[in-house]
Image (cartoon, rainbow, N blue to C red; front, side, top):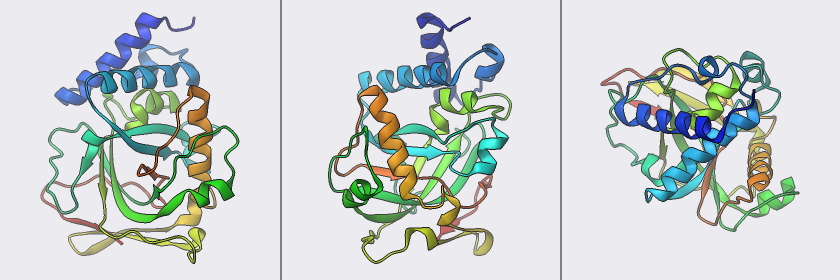
Length: 250
């Protein structure tokens, strides 16, 4: 049976409250076993509308499940999408409390920064690349607001695709002479390398994540604005952060 508007609103509010209180809720898919991907996005949109109503500001977007192997894990046939808000952005080098999170995971990213508005449908790789000012190193700290690990894509999508915190580095690099497929990412914990990857793992080329994101958002008449940034997906396995440790992504 399809979710009602009230059920969508109630689930969205429960997820918002879980984030604010750090008290997780029953997984969305366990509450509504027949929830579709479209219904999960409806929950995400309700959360988006609440954040905007409460004065938060959209600063970009994120893409998850960008690797085929992760899509298989969550029974998905495509990447998933979420929105990033000003309240989620932390300063580089700033201590971040994980005590206020339920199940944090840290990922090194190569974020795109836009210097032109970008809106689908029909955005091509060429148009997307022409809209990019450059790439900037970034961290995402994703967090699930569910009691158990997410089981299917609907758990992730309804939970704002696990958007929680983003940290942007201090240097932007134009993409003119960069092969976006072959950027190496190294993640260190307290000076020790704990994960590595190359951006080819992100849909073959992370620009494809940006293209997919703007064309997906167009289904809801939403676009990206100049100055927004997009985290396209991590090329290495996510890592559970340890309190008092220091992390560096290169």
